[in-house]
Amino acid sequence: MNKITRALISLTDKSGIEGFARELSELGVDILSTGGTAKKIREAGIAVRDVSDFTGFPEMLDGRVKTLHPKVHGGILNQRDNAEHQKQCAEHDLQPIDLIAVNLYAFAKTVADPDCSLADAIENIDIGGPTMLRAAAKNFHDVTVIVDPADYPQVIKEIRAQGNTTLKTRFRLAAKVFALTSQYDTAISAWLDKVDVEVNPYFADKE
Image (cartoon, rainbow, N blue to C red; front, side, top):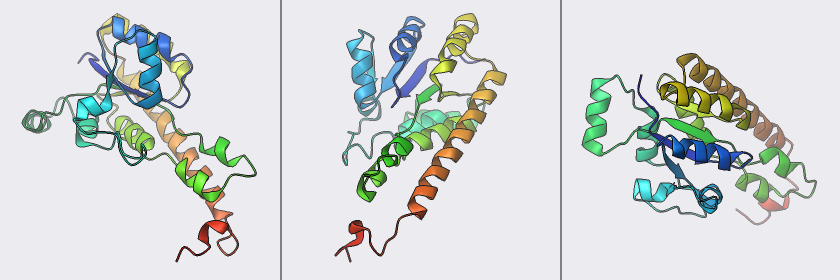
């Protein structure tokens, strides 16, 4: 069993993150993060690296592009027991990312505001988060993925005991990911379906 050596944490719901990050750091895990999450971890006195330093590519386009990078997704998706994968990782300097803790832009909360514009709704559709979550969940054999802060204690307990989570735990956590991303996409689709393009001001004089 490989040990968890590197984690990427990027959260909208930051509840419990200081304690979780501190536990990971004490266990020798290299923590990568983005934006406000990195700031919160750093302010708690915990070592953290910006994802942009890890990838060598800056966050850009108002934060729309920050984790969409081969070094992130290659680090997540490579199969640790696949010799060809490991050869390619060595060739392209893709370092493993063994744990992902991510939750998504609060789309449902945003559109619950009756004054929410279509532009605001669109900006609160998360792209990088679901992509990382689905990648990690697909590769649950090797990667632990967390979408719910309630799972932090069990994950830490297992890492302390054996350096990694159990395969059964990783599978359970992966299943939660696909339930979440399905609900998330359904909420987006349902809200957009109600938009009347004939009267919505977003479409005025756009063509």
